[in-house]
Amino acid sequence: MDIGRIDLNLLVHLDVLLREQNVTKAASHLGITQPAMSNGLKRLRNLFNDPLLVRTSDGMAPTELALTLKPQVRDILSKVEKVVQPERSFDLNSGRIFRIMASDYAESTLIPGVLAEVRRQAPTITLDVLTPSDVSFEDVEQGRVDMAINRFDTLPQSFHQKTIWRDSFSCLMSPDNVLVKNFDLDSYLQASHIWVSKTGFGVGVGVNPKDVQRLGWVDEALGRLGGKRDISVFTRHYQSAMQLAQQHDLVATLPTRAAKLKSQSSKLVVKAPPFDIPEFELKMAWSPLLQHNAGHKWLRQLIVSVADASV
Image (cartoon, rainbow, N blue to C red; front, side, top):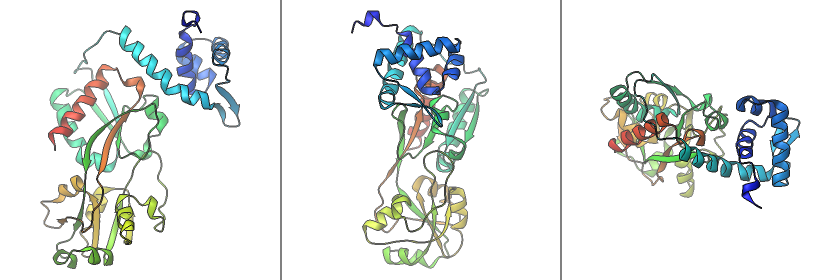
């Protein structure tokens, strides 16, 4: 196929169509008429010899080929944008609002340092910190949310991502807890526990205590040893877990950086777990639409520098 005979504007049409999965919305986004967008889709179908988008009861759905093309087309257009657009510096007095989805863990351990540095460098900038339940993959993919910071089991192929840091696990308990003086695997298994976690995106669902594979790192590690925790309470908030751990007979096993926030508290004791738990990665993820945005690049670099300085 002679690439010189291909209208490369069709790739722009395809990028928007696959993002919106709606001809009318795609046309509005590009500022063209719906018939022109429909004609573009027809030409794309002929070009790739594939329907690309098919009508279902839930609207337009991408074909298998379209799903394969989506990250490739976005990557191509992103590189073209970088070539044709001059490098611009970010105006630190722009008053821009950055929307960041952050887990409770990230909000407690990372965001305070990020906010302090933002206020030092660009005091007119505002941070709007959202919870995982506020945000969907689509919100990030379309750039409505600038950044997602969390532990992710999976991410869409099109997303850019970077590991912020790796963290281990620690245990929090009251100094009055009988385990403080004899904290081994047997006593850990006999204790009452606080489960805390919230990864990924979207509204959470109830936890099944019997489904060890879905309870996370701590319970999977125990399962490999043939052990199982007696969990008294499930929470999605690390600050709540820290408060609950002040009760005389409860143990919270949570990321070390979160646990250390209470290391100076007279009401809590930080202990190393009596078994090995694999470390995890805190990551930030963002849309390819924002990859070359000057303000977004500034924010990403700031977050990385804050994280590196906190090690």
